[in-house]
Image 1 (spheres, rainbow, N blue to C red):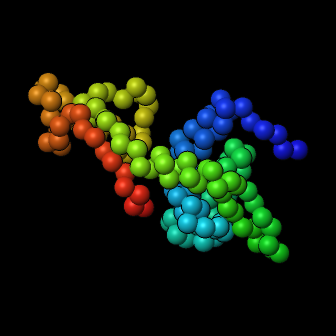
Image 2: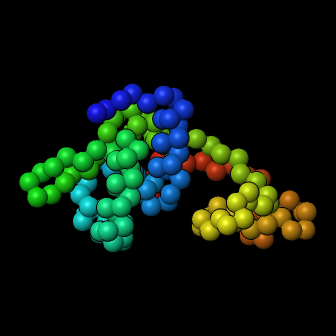
Length: 141
C-alpha cells in the first residue's frame, strides 16, 4: 500500500539515497532515462549484485520504481519531481572549507576531506585556498 510521506520523511529518504556514492551514480544514470540492472552495472563498472542491492535501497526509499518487462526489470525514477529536485541540487554552489577536519572520523569517501590547512596559511596541501566554492554545472561524471 502506498502512503504519502511527511516532509521530514522525504528529506530522510532522499538523504539516505544520495549519501552513498554508488546510489548517487545510479540516480544520475537513471536521470537520463530508464535502466536495467545489467546495463547499469556495465556502464558504471559495478557488479550486477551491487547494482541490484542499491536499486533495492532506492526502491525502498521510494525514489526508484521497478517495472517488470517479461524476464527483465526496468528501473526508473519514480516521480519527475525527484529528477527536477536532483537537477536543482546539481546547480547548487557549495562553499567548502578544505582545511576543516571531517566531522566523521571514519570517513573514507574520496574527495570528502581533501588536503589540510596544517600550517594555518589558508592554503591546503594541494595548494588550493582552504575555503573555496565548488559549482556543479550539470556535467556528468
